[in-house]
Image (cartoon, rainbow, N blue to C red; front, side, top):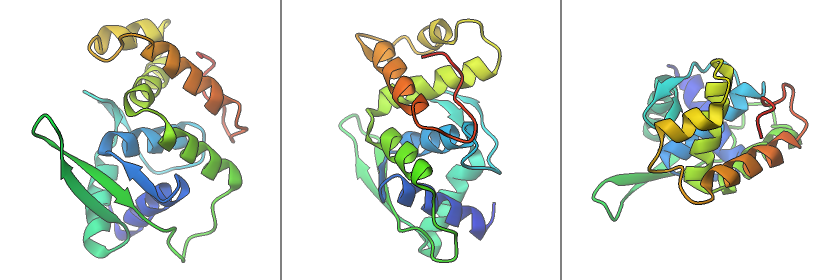
Length: 172
């Protein structure tokens, strides 16, 4: 983790529209940008909320400390906290492509649980699961309720329609 990684996080937030609500949402946007070849240098592994990158979490904290981005923590109704990240794209980074901004902002505007389910299914597909949606439902039964899996597939379908350097797995 370095200061340049915190700039990377600021750029992700900026490209997502300048504001990302939730640490999990930030992780999933970064993961999907990585899968599609629009972000690099981040390594993800499976954790409770799906694909997770410890370096990204650390870089976000570092970025908030050094002013690359603003993180505001607020209490949740269940007693925890959530973060709101706000940032402008660092001036010393190249401008983002329209494709990256469209992709990141589409992901950022989606429901956080639907985004988590979609990113998890993509992660599991890339890990070789034959039916990543069934495995996602098995791992997240409390979240894969109602229409959320269908909504996650629709989100992936919408994201797949954006021409990225590398396509998302064809699982939508």
